[in-house]
Length: 202
Image 1 (cartoon, rainbow, N blue to C red):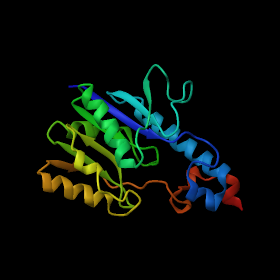
Image 2 (image 1 turned 30 degrees about the vertical axis):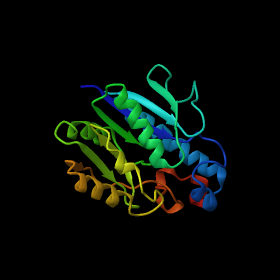
Image 3 (image 1 turned 30 degrees about the horizontal axis):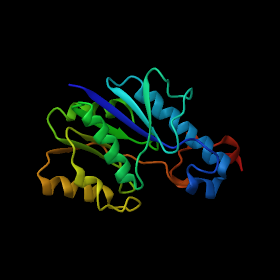
Image 4 (image 1 turned 90 degrees about the vertical axis):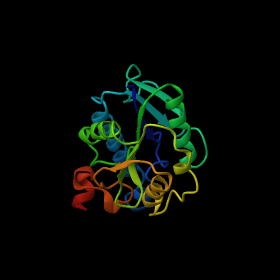
């Protein structure tokens, strides 16, 4: 069985990442925090037994932290997040992958073990989902294309995960939940180990 791991990232550009954190802590600090999140995602994904794909928000970038000989690099295709994820999954299934997992680059609590557990769960389930505390999800895994789960969603709302699970249940898709984790999207989400020491002392 062929496994594919998709990682959605934003190009780390000052003023274009973690805008809600930037509003509270400044653009430079937001970029530093996001760069740390990217490094964490890289480090936990490196050992995963799967072909690895990084999908960039603006343009694929050679010579960055994602090694060119390990990570295949593409541009996210589509407008809404759902369209972009659907396109990425389609690409993988068209290339004969039987288990496909997608994650983002916002979750410091995500570990290699959780990603590996997602692939393992797909041996006996058609889908696996990792709920985020904000109502979204930090990971989604599929064994086949289920187009409906990427449609008719308000991707910035707190109902994305429950709406997706409702789609699974309506379609009779056997699915499994992963542990609930916290994405780092606002200043309140930033754990102490990611905060600039200067920020802490102020």
